[in-house]
Length: 505
Image 1 (cartoon, rainbow, N blue to C red):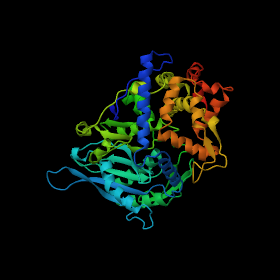
Image 2: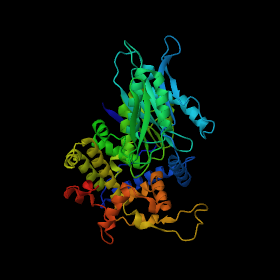
Image 3: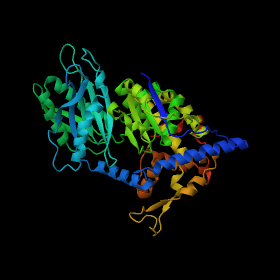
């Protein structure tokens, strides 16, 4: 199943090369392209609600809210197709939901009610194309809902034909949760499917047991006790992974749908926070590829509109001037081509060429490197290899940042409220890079909101950052001497040493 990525942006840029020695005309062209890119990224910050610090603070608040969730999910829905009248297309509607009523004390009750009205469109973005069928393979996909405060909820969906004979319409089981654990909810949906096939009345007691279960800490397993007529009491274990960063990411799907060259062009566009549209024939392919490409940004986080499955009724979103990642079914392409969009074709020149070349080399060898790790979990090893390659890219790009975060003096004039305990020496960080091409890229990348959030989180929580990226950064800093952190081409050396960084746990 192929997927197409379409990149749209307002301005047309000149292609640039990555040479340190250029003719006068080449230098002028590259400078012009650089100024245009910088202007575009800065213009994003000037959009309403896109200010550098205001947006970042709201994102930090949204991240903290996830820590206070005490339920595995917010609500469960069964969405089915119905016809309003003969001859009209099918309309998706909620056929069953749990809990039956929203709690009066629920802070975001109005927002949730709005989401309950729109979720059926996410479950069936292709509702108008359906007719009853005898066979349909079960399909798992997910979508993302973004709240007014910037917080995100995941919709985990299982679409399948209900039990019965003859031609019939599919239905979707959908769980909405703040928790990003694809496999955990896939296991819950397996049980929902089993119980609903016996009797729809068995679903609600099961979902109540799930909702009332203690909220698991990362890496912890909880046991759910349920009763099933004919089977008696059953025990079900649900594990929340310690690191859910790659938990629902299928990189192989991404590589099977996109060429490596196109993938890196998209990656470069993401780093500059452009507007990107993915299209595919299947919902599962669409959501898998969107989630996978966003995972490549780690340790950075996409701060803008993110809709891996966009209902056709919301297609006008792609006309907004702000950055987005949107996934569309191929059936929406005719409508898409009628919209006033401008396409850009400068992506081959975005990434610093030496880092891009090293990244390509690793990704071309991903299967070989995954097999060298041994064991039976080829899928897991492949994900690790791909993830580590992009982490290494960012280590080479910004891994020297801890050297430029210093303790703040007792002067909070630049931040009237809640000044961070540490301060990032922005200009010193940029100037410490000797490579002209890398410095040009950083000029633009440092203006993005994802970089701004990354730095601000570390200004506020410098000692608390203990993720994989921080581990790799410390290894990187330990391996260099004095001012060697100014050199950025350590990536290729790692390849010659059999990718030792990939074997580190």
